[in-house]
Length: 120
Ligand code: HEC
Image 1 (cartoon, rainbow, N blue to C red):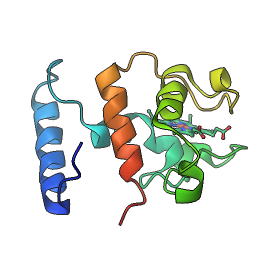
Image 2: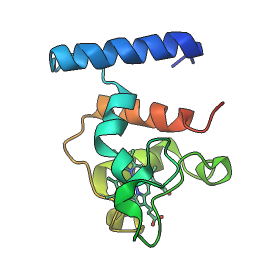
Image 3: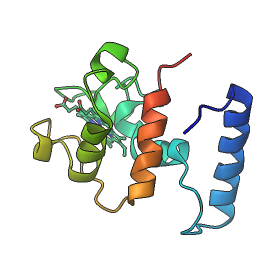
């Protein structure tokens, strides 16, 4: 996906969030930001830094998704696998839960959202 300008991204995000609230249409474009807020923020934190409130006692900590050095070693496929199957299935912490109910499109939206975390 082409990276839209900050304002366009913000507006799109706001509009998608509103439309998601208005109707949970199955055919609606999945919104990575909303999916992240609903499913990932408790552990990975609002900015993806791995500092969510649910993760205070975790060892290892949820991945800091904004750490460019670490994330450069993680492929899109790795993200899709850990989100779909959970940490235990890919040899990582079992505290990273599986999200088996997410669709391929939703996971793709999450990958795009995660890739943009930490970008200025
Ligand atoms: C209950 C807490 C929890 C939730 C909720 C959670 N994670 Fe995680 N996540 C973790 C932990 C803990 C790790 C660290 C695993 C490790 O390093 O062994 C992790 C690691 C990751 C990684 C790193 C993968 C890698 O190969 O290093 C990614 C990407 C990730 N999570 C994405 C997500 C996304 C996207 C969501 C929401 C759909 C999510 N997580 C929800 C706890 C959580």
